[in-house]
Image (cartoon, rainbow, N blue to C red; front, side):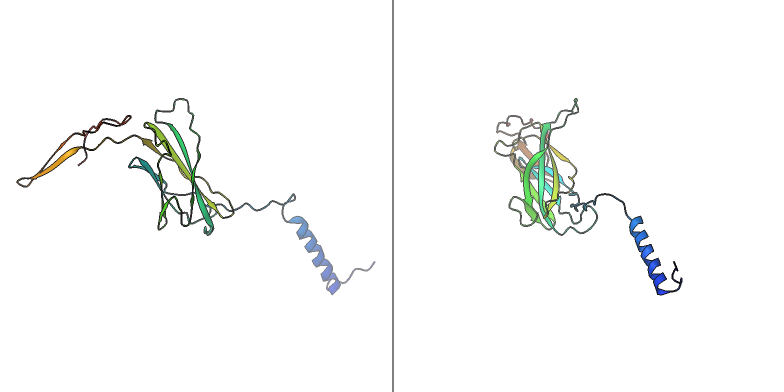
Length: 202
């Protein structure tokens, strides 16, 4: 059998076909195809919880990126989780379980206030309100329009206690380069579970 001349078009075509087959067999990893991992929103940052007027005010920033660093353009909502436990030191190491408290829409939320890229959600404790001497902990995660949830935010907590009633009879009297302030202790009964006043902030 005569082989084609090395410089002939037939020889070049044969060599190219051999290289193509070798490349296809040698590249990649054998096995079942792996579907691409869905891109999830990055974890929510700057979550805060503050006690305000017998409620807990939660604030956070709108995330702008996905976990892989790409721009987050399809944000749908936030899922807010809450856990309730004792303020006493945990001797057994057990932690209270988190459960879904609320879902907040990313755009035009009905149960939160949006100012710029900062959200504010007020937790009133539900129908029974908050219980004194309990710790309320929160986590938050962002969800995109494909239903992919990002990682949960850092946990924030508030040790709830009732505020004492205000003092009464505040009077300011001007003197020589000074102003004298006088007041009387609260006359209203201290709510059950609220500590007695230890001092006054002026």
